[in-house]
Image (spheres, rainbow, N blue to C red):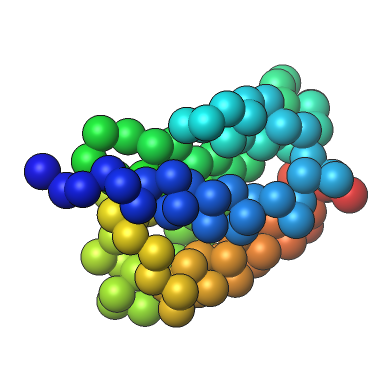
Length: 123
């Protein structure tokens, strides 16, 4: 079982990836173990669209990014190293801070936001 001592630090780093978008998006959870943001109401989908979140779990810290689920082509250029952290279609799991991969994830998050702006009419 991995050591969870670093999980709060990993969580803080992943939360900081989402934070730049919170002025435009709605924070729906902000606790010690969960941070989540949604976009505005979308007429096409008839609900607020989930954008991203991070969660401290038992064995890792997860980062969920909905744009890569809706637009999988966003993943075409990710590194094999970041791909290894993927579980499912839109989740990335980390056990420690990996600066290069977190920077890549931050860039992917920005691209995801820009794609939502374009495709879903976010401002």
